[in-house]
Length: 418
Image (cartoon, rainbow, N blue to C red; front, side):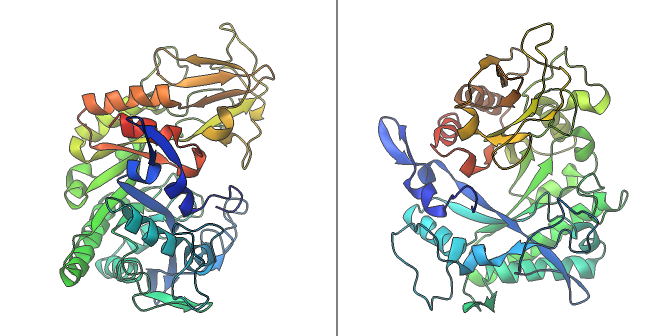
């Protein structure tokens, strides 16, 4: 939001042609996950809460403050630069920020649902600890439902109060990265117990959402973002926890990136027999992930395919025998607008260089004249993935994230391919 200057209002105003008619991308979405909410050690357990504190964990993972950040100011306190209805929020309104704009966005686009996404890469610190016992699971779920579904935000900077966020969110998305470990080094994890505790946590969230839904006369959704590596899938019980879910968002991207010293695809649809990766890494592709998830008991009609609106890249890449830099050694991550080794589609689409559509993986890659190598999805790649989604009878697709696609071209490609 800050560096990219992206507002909720931009979802409303960005339009692309659908059947010859300029259509808001908000009408090409069925749901939005608002990412992220965080959990904190509180009242002898772990609870959802609202704080405004910079996250230090990515740069200083050993800090006691790692994983405890938050941005309540952006969530419901600040005055947006642009608003969905073009109006300034009154100084004494109990709700402003992104939450109020999401509420206005839903009013303007009645078919749109909005979910609060809890956790993510940086804020999954407490999930394992909070899922250890029945009492702790109840405490966490109750606090999150109270805050985001009942809408009882803490009063901060003159905003918030009981029911102030009521009607903003239609459900909760759990993004625990990851049960059993493999996430940030500061995360709590239990390599054995997390597997079933994840199932029990989903059951508790489902029960708490149903209880609130009985009060409100509404059914609230429960979804989860899940790792696409086959070893991540094996750390959960899809055959058991799927019964509590409306769907799961399969994060079929970030298979490879600048943490590795060799170029490779970050969101391949299929395995390439020429890929030098071995072991579990050889299964880092969407098709193997879907196959493993279905085999583990996840119904196909509860799987959403992940589509990245960004790419991953390297620098110092030699052309290699195929003159395109694929599977070649590098000198590190390529410079990105906001982070090394990663950049938005809206930036990559304008980079000079030669582009190829890889015949096996079906992903696009770019090799520049300056030794940079990038893999990313464009509308052509997305069309292929959407055909795969239909062929596999999957429920749909989701993306990370909207502000990487300022023109709406990728959003529209997903919508058209549904």
